[in-house]
Length: 408
Image 1 (cartoon, rainbow, N blue to C red):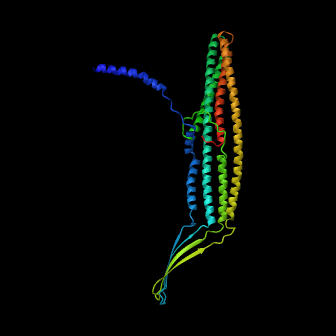
Image 2: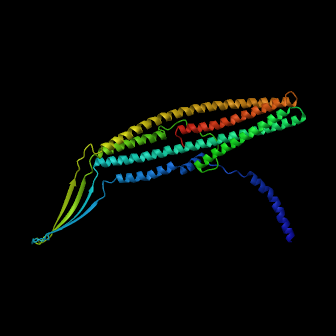
Image 3: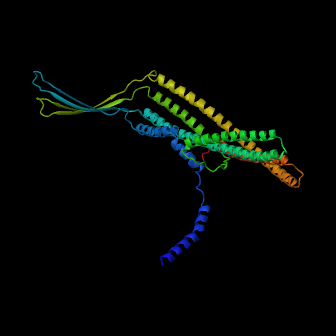
């Protein structure tokens, strides 16, 4: 009975084995990260992002502080005086006071404007920094793709030369070719192996830079990004430069409003006790101190603010000019790459037809082996050129979106 049961188990396992193997063979491979995920991963590792996020907390605290009318923390004062001489009045005074500096309406408004402009500046720089991180990831990704195509090209070329070297070796042994031809073919194979090693090293270096930037080992799908032909009215880099200029102008207005220190107001309660009086006397006092400001008080601060404004305005103009130039260059590069890809496809199609004709002629003895191998080598080079131009097209798409300020 146990033997029969064991046999049934074995038969079931044998019948289930092909299904398991088939399921394993058709199981989908794990998908790599998307470009957006790679950019987000790089953003989480970017030191500049951490600095700007910390500045967000800083400007939020400054904006909350700017809403307060108090220029300084309130001060509590206690005083007491007593008549300890020979006088019969036996006079005593006790006083409690609270004082603080109060912002004038123009000063408070200027502080709130500066806090708002500081928030806008940090937000704009966050967008510009994220765009820069996206550009870095785009470049790293397509550099890795180009290095991968270059490595595949070198490996295919080596495989071709090894096949040619084997053919030459057989013909040398048969006496059809000289020994020098065999040595030349061997030298070409060794040189191709060196090129494969160099290409493999270059691909590893590029992939390592991508891994350091993003923390990911797999590349996104190497497909051209969808193009957005309508750019945003203001590029994120230009918005960041303009936000810095606006903040500098707000700082200048605050410096002009603070030519005098804020006034100080105090509220006091006094109690007077005297032997000749039946009841103590209580009184309330209010005092106001208004400093007299001069233009020389903040002259240095205002001059520094004007310098910052001039610098920010010049940087904004430069960013705008560079952004327009980058868009034009990216569009021209994309057009050139598309034309080169069309030419490469046309050349590859012609060479494939050429090789097919040579193969037919070789089978009937009308063409020699060397001519056929040469035709195959040219066809391989044409296919490699098509692959390289496809990578260049994907990179050109990414560069145009980057120039337009479009995030993945």
